[in-house]
Amino acid sequence: MRPAYLSLALAMLLLPTASIVGGYSLAGPGATTCGEIADEYRLNPELTDAAMVLWTEGFMRGVNEEGRDLTIDSKEQADRLRAYCNVQPSASFEQAARNLYDSLQPWVDEHTQ
Image (cartoon, rainbow, N blue to C red; front, side, top):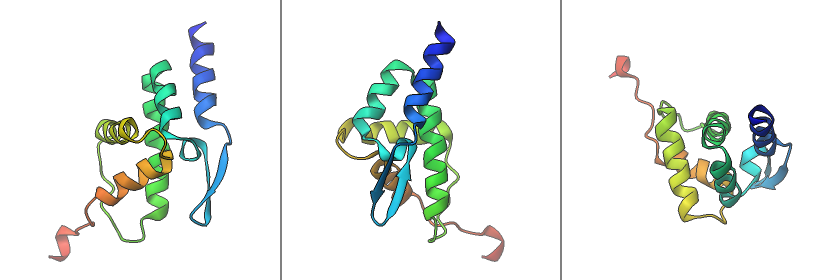
């Protein structure tokens, strides 16, 4: 029974949900609200964290025109995303990922300094 439950939780997070935000389309967790992510987290914390981190890493790589340092520990990333969502349940998960991205420092190449 447990594997079916895990599969259902993952499917709920990764459904091809789509929305248009800021002139670009979103799918998956980014198209859901923080409250929906929190609901999924209560059902399966490990799977929800994995889905949040994977989606956020792809999102940040896609918007990283400023050359920010995207090296952030997965646990810290999930903790910070959940902290944002706990305070802003009606915000989109994309906003949580954007908030995390905005907090990261620019990349510094140690070899050129």
